[in-house]
Image (cartoon, rainbow, N blue to C red; front, side, top):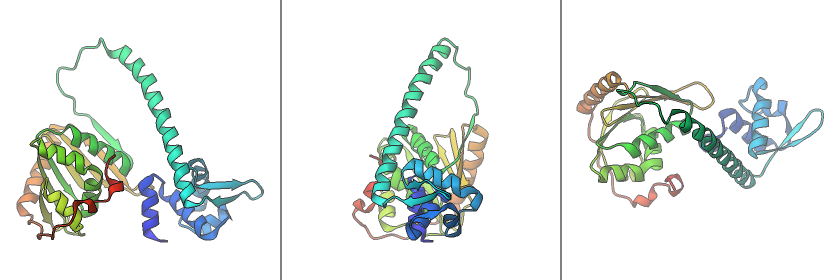
Length: 275
C-alpha cells in the first residue's frame, strides 16, 4: 500500500483502518466488506466499523443488499464531503460548548480561586489534539520554548505553527530545539527555523518533549492504536525541572546543524500554515 496517500488521509483525520479501507476501495472498486478486508490491512472484525465511519464522513456510498456493498466516492468529491462533515461537527461542538459553558459559568462564578497552582495532567489521544495543544502553549508562551523532538515532528511543528513561533520570537521568547539525527530536515524548513530559534542535533531521542516558560511540559510518544500518538501535558514543577535538566544535557552534547543553503521561505507548504 502506498505510504503517502495513507499518510495524507491520516493527516486530515481518518483512522488507519478507515484510510486503508478507502484506499482498498479505490483500487478494487465496489466491494463487499469481506473483499475490503482481504484487500487491505483492515482485520475482518473492524472492517464494518471502518466502512460505516467512511460512509458517515463522505468517502463511501453504500449499496443495500445481501451482502451489502460499498463503493468509493471520487477523491475530489470525498474531500469536499468530508470538509462539510467536519464543518457540521465543528458547528455542533461549538454550540454545545456555548450551552454547557454558560451553565458552568453560572455554577462556579462565585467560587473562590485556588490558593496555588495545581499540578494537573492531561492526555491527548492523537496527533491533531497534540498539535492543537502545542499551538495553545506556543501562543501563550512568554519567555521560553524548548523542544526535544524528531525531524518529522519538527517539520510538522514548523509547518503548522511557524507564524505563532515567529510572533513569540519577535516578542522576546527564547526558542531552542534539540532534534535527533535519525532523519533529515528539509532545507526550506531549516532555513525558516534558523531565523527564529537555535537548533542542536543529537544522535537519537526517544519520544518528544516540549517545555514552556519554566512551567508546562508536554510529552508525546508513538502508540499502537489507530491514531499513532499519545500526548501528556502537565504543570508539574518537579517534572519540568527533570526534563529541563535532560534538555540541558542534550543541548550541551549536541552539535550545530550543518549550514543549509537558503531557500525561499514560501517553500514551507502553504496548505500546512495556519489560516
